[in-house]
Length: 112
Image 1 (tube, one colour):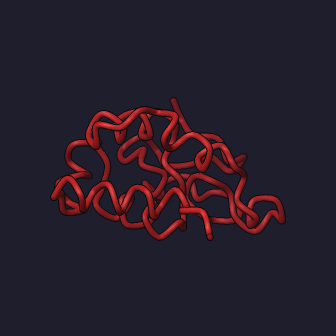
Image 2 (cartoon, helix red, strand yellow):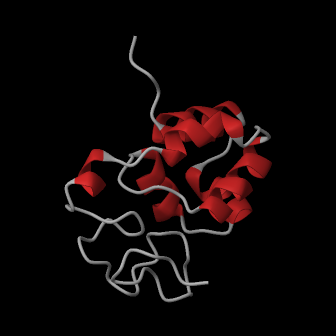
Image 3 (cartoon, helix red, strand yellow):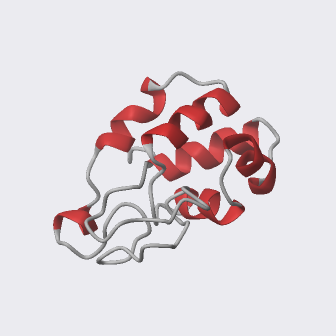
């Protein structure tokens, strides 16, 4: 049996709570597109956004932690960095969930 990805877990719990992507995004404080990318496993939420997801979906942090802490295969190969999915970070994507804060840095870290 295949293990659920982080994105599948987010999607399943969002639907179980009856939220649209837009509604969940508003509760978490990110864009609808960020939720979509997380659910498609294109990017991962930051730790702060993961905490907000847990509050919104009423689940404990450890429910998501195993999948969140795994480094995706694409990051191991240097094909994409975790924030926006761009190889070197774009500096202003917002796809990392840090909308309005300058996006991802080229080194893959998120602005504070």
